[in-house]
Amino acid sequence: MYKQIAARMQEGNMLARLHFILSAANLFSPFLTKFQSECTSIHLLFEELAQILQLLLQRFVKFDELKYKSSAQLLSVQLDSRPADL
Image 1 (cartoon, rainbow, N blue to C red):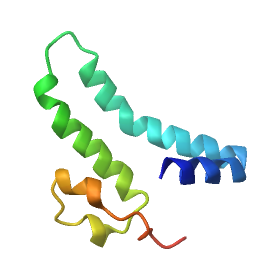
Image 2 (cartoon, rainbow, N blue to C red; image 1 turned 30 degrees about the vertical axis):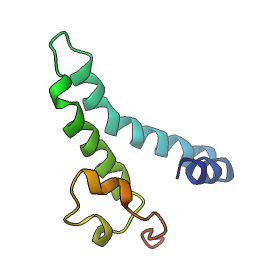
Image 3 (cartoon, rainbow, N blue to C red; image 1 turned 90 degrees about the vertical axis):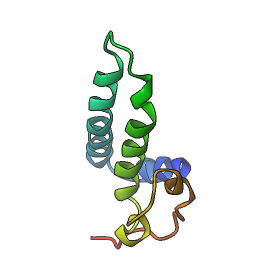
Image 4 (cartoon, one colour; image 1 turned 180 degrees about the horizontal axis):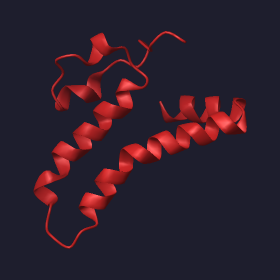
């Protein structure tokens, strides 16, 4: 999936690239803020990473493929069922 995204970003215009990077950065900001604190939060790591994966997949995969999936099942989602182009 990373290779597909990287290839598309090289094809597109600079403004579209910047919007995608800003959008992805906004997904990671709460995660980074939470895990850069002084308190121990390793017990939250799995749930937070699963949530980030869910949010990222929602941008590239149809909703029906993600509906009712557990955190562990997100890794087996087929990436060839992308949402329709707008």
